[in-house]
Length: 72
Image 1: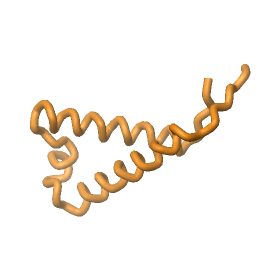
Image 2: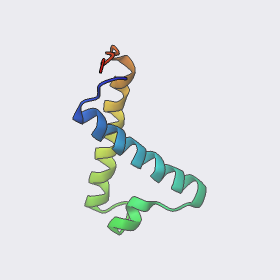
Image 3: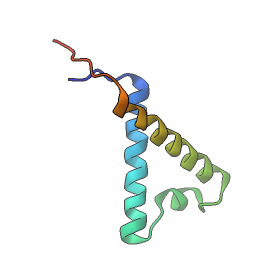
Image 4: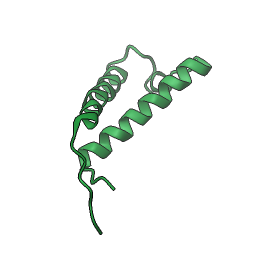
């Protein structure tokens, strides 16, 4: 089992949220973030999109990390 820190877990949750939102856009033409915050162009929605984008960039680093096995 790989030990994940808090930032890894937060990033993975945000990446999953972003993926689910894009799935909704692709399959149903429904943008959940825009629906919650009024429009895709509002400042709040843009901040959410930016945070999820940063989480995606952070998620790239998970591919290049050495794996540490945690023994119980």
